[in-house]
Image 1 (cartoon, helix red, strand yellow):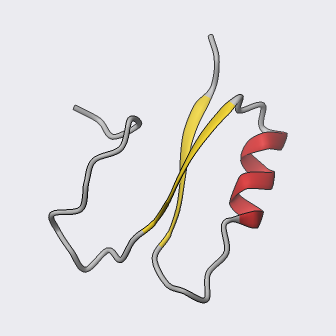
Image 2: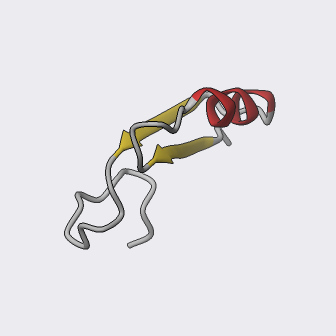
Length: 51
């Protein structure tokens, strides 16, 4: 089964690079990304969010 994950940062100073590298090394074939603040409780869901 393909491995699909979601990488997310919440501040402008954070980078996705390390998360993307770690997920790729773990065998993920599809990585969704997001750069949103966690202070907004109504942020959009992602394909990887639990139902």
